[in-house]
Length: 241
Image (cartoon, rainbow, N blue to C red; front, top):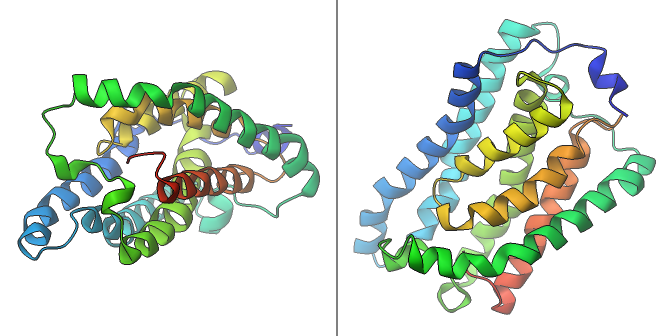
């Protein structure tokens, strides 16, 4: 299942570069959000808009420029799409790997999501009220921003960057790369520390789905569909983010 990826033998990155590349986008996005929040509150607008807009304004250029620089250093002869492992989606890969990964991801996250409330209130009760968003605070504009940023653009960028570029270049074997990459991807979500256990449960099956002939396309599809489920649950009033 991993033969096509293994053929290229991606250059292994140093641990310093692995850590920096995983955490820098989260630091930049969270910093942008916190900088925008006072202005949004003063204007009577939802602070969440800063985070969602930051996916386009900050995360998009940071990840693309980082991948472009890495591509120029490590594999200058390839397109950025090929460098990120994005290939044509194969129906067999989707059925044999993508569907099980999606179901496992949803079941695993559903099994631990109830822990978010005690973690949020017990460990992160000091966070301001505007830090989280429930259905009672979501309006039409927020839903549109959420769908574009968190259901479409964000997952595509994250999978291309974290699974396509970084995961194959983490030191160690395939399973170790998946697990370490999943943990670092979880910590990258600095704006959701109370949800780390849910994010990790969601991410591991997605990370394990990387390696078919469809490349990073399978993780992209699974991530988009997984976030779409969360989006629907938010509208239904069953989750808080």
